[in-house]
Every structure is written in structure tokens, then in C-alpha cells.
Length: 282
Image (cartoon, rainbow, N blue to C red; front, top):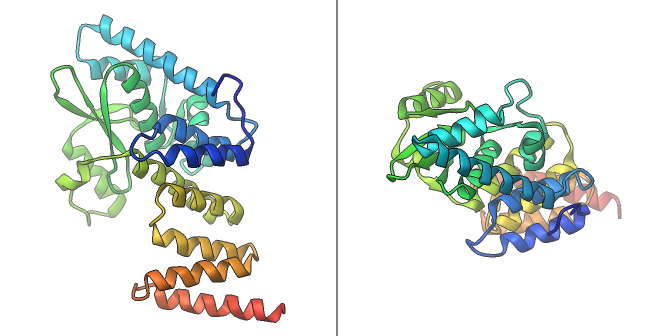
């Protein structure tokens, strides 16, 4: 892609599909930008955004070389103080918070997209950064030259400890979830992209923006074709959009693959209603 690379929604979807078909060799930053390119075809210049990440990576590397201290501290100062990236505390569910180009433009977002910025800039600056997908919150682990890993919360713009992670879980889950080692394991690009799209899906579904929610589901299925619950949700969203024959096919496929799940009976009832609607049109 080149500068001034604004794509139509269909082309953005095609390039996203090609990107996530590459096994584990997914370019996380580019794939995340392609999510935004489909959401806002006239507003996302993928090439210029990649250039921006490259420039920030070079600048961060300069700050690290000149800082004389731990690389993670220099990267934090660059991103959170100099560049001003911070969590959107006032409008957390704004869909722009899940679009990487808007996060780069506005310098605010939700934990996962700010973590993607941290990961992409850190990688370009020579810092090893891993994404950590805690329940309900996303952070990163960044490593200094000596290999020591430091947990960083890009939403709060600070280093954190395990106790801080437990406090976050307590705030989200009312003390019902105890922090464990598995919560601090790194996750790959597929899990990160799925989570970004899941956030968009939830925002759009809550606003009854069914077409946009469906687009998010369809991209999740490109990333994770075996995500059965997304098949279910695709069928239900197709029904909301009066694409009834497609909805019937999708829900039948879901029930065939997961006949004994707790929600299967509810889906069967939904399927009967959709089939009745379809019969009444014939």
C-alpha cells in the first residue's frame, strides 16, 4: 500500500481477508487499520497511518537510545507524555475507540487499541512487547534490554503490578475472578483482532446497528472460521436484516455443529420463528 491509500469498504474487506489468511504471519497493525478502512472508507488512509507508526517507532528508538535508562520507561514517556496517548474515560463505547486510524488521530481509545499502538511502536523501536488479554481488560508486557518484563497498562499510561491487575478484575467482576497465571499469558494477533471486532460488534448490536454488527461478525469469522457462536450471531443478525433464507441456513449449520450447547434450544425456537416468517412470505 502507498500513501493516500484510501480503500472502498469491499476492497478493505478483501485486503483484510488476505492479511488474516497468512497463518501466524499477520501484520497486526495493518490488519487493525483495515478494520477501520471498512468502517470509514473515506476516513482511513492506511498507507499514511503505517507511515505514522513507522515515524513514531523511529522517534521512540531515538528516545530510548538517548534516555540512558530502561527502554520501557523511555517508551512510556514518549507515548504517554510526549505523544499524549490516553484512555478514553468519557466515551468508552464510542466505536472510533476500536478503529486504529482514529486512535492514532485522536490519541485516545480503549485498552486493546492503545495496546496495539504500544505494540506496533514498540516493535519498530526494538522493544519486545506482548499483548496480554486479561478478562475485561487488555494490557501489554514490555521487555527491557536485560529481558526483564514489565506490565504496562496503556489505557492508564503506567507500569502496573499483579496487584493492580487484581484490582482491575475486582472492579469489573465484583471480586468474583481471582487473577491467575493464565490471565497474564501473551495472546497472538488473531485473538487481538477478534477482540477488537468483538468490541465493535457489541457496540453496534447495542445500538441496533445490525448491518454494521453483521460486518463485524463476518470479519471475526475470517479471523476465526471455527468460532461457532459467531455463526449463531450471524444467523440472528441476518434475520434482523430480513435476509431470512440465509439466516435459516446459518442457524441450521450452527445447530448441526453444536446440538447440545445450553443455548441450542433457544436458537431452535428462534429458527422456528424465522421459518414461520419465511413461510408467510411465500
